[in-house]
Length: 289
Image 1 (cartoon, rainbow, N blue to C red):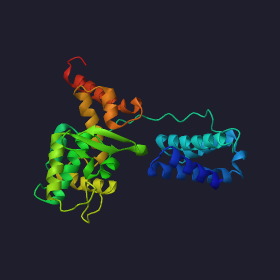
Image 2 (cartoon, rainbow, N blue to C red):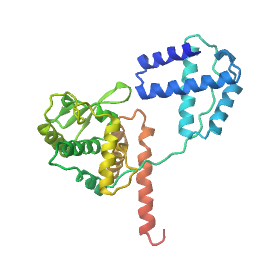
Image 3 (tube, helix red, strand yellow):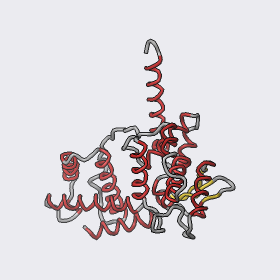
Image 4 (spheres, rainbow, N blue to C red):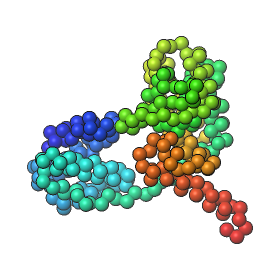
């Protein structure tokens, strides 16, 4: 059974271009499932019935996993079975037509424009780390890119003349996104003072490429100094970017493209944010609300 899992993971890595994080999650999900069905007395995948698969879902619910996590595990296993059937290893899937648990739609948090401006003014613009930190935050807010995409940026990805950045997103897909003058100026100021010929755009103190976690730690430091909500993360810049664009009249399709979302439904959650804000303003301001 482990051999099937390894074949499947190799397939999705090379044919589906899944990220390393997704591959790790799928591996953990499938190994957990394998362990469960063995405990249920199944010596091979052919022995797994629809009832046993439903018993696994009940087990996940009992373990109090979030609906999002359960949904991902179901997708991982269903996709695994689909591959096995396609390759002729199995005749049918016990996970077929089993509904994924309905997920709660949690509205993402975002910052106001004044909060963004407050945070951008915190780094010390006379020091190299301060110039770098401001350039990072300016870039995150100006482009709406993911922190993993920011960490993988190279100096050559910045097109100053056209105000564009080449971004490598999920599934190794590349896209071009606009970047504002404030962010470009911050990047220039940082690079002018940086004494390194590294191809990576943002470097740590040891002259190596910054990681996602390094960016998060940097942000935590400035948030604490500003006395702001400790729940703010690098991803909050992305949420703020999308929300502010929609608030100011940007159309949903354009925001979808800027964010690099494969499906419009993923972007639509931001319309719920703007609607909730409108309702809040209405309830506060209208005399008969």
